[in-house]
Amino acid sequence: MRNFLFVLLLFAVTDAFCQKTKVENNVQYKAVPLAKNDNRFLALKKMAQERMPQFLDSLKKYGDDRDGYSFIIKSDFTEGDKHEHMWSQVLSYSNGVFKAIFVDSPFNITNIKNGDKVEIKQTDVEDWAINNIRTKKITGDFSDKYLNSKQ
Image 1 (tube, one colour):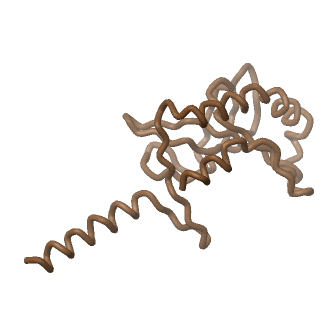
Image 2 (cartoon, one colour):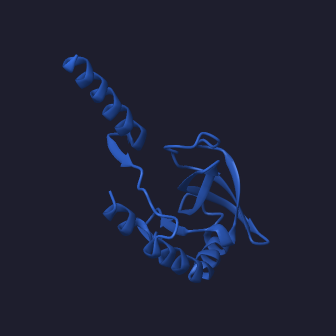
């Protein structure tokens, strides 16, 4: 009986771990739990919103140079009560709305998958990043250090 309980416990722990961890290309990614009112994350979102003109100016100037630049935005995706903050690659921007391709891997929601087309309101952007592919310089990505510290 004790062995049976140990095996059952082992399966439960393994199942719980697998739901929160993904390994892709030998890189381990973990879901980071955040409280809805996480003050630090909300301050980083505010910073990203305040610096949005920089993102939009760069997108306007370099957005057609897909070999030289990549523009991504982070926003909240939901399915019922589940929320995940994930990235999408911007294709265009007009009238306060980004047209983009979802480029992340959900842990807990199933209503979106990598490659899906999405529309994201500018006001819903939680973070943004500009990758200058030629110089390998990344601008933005305000939440990266904070979220990595939570893993």
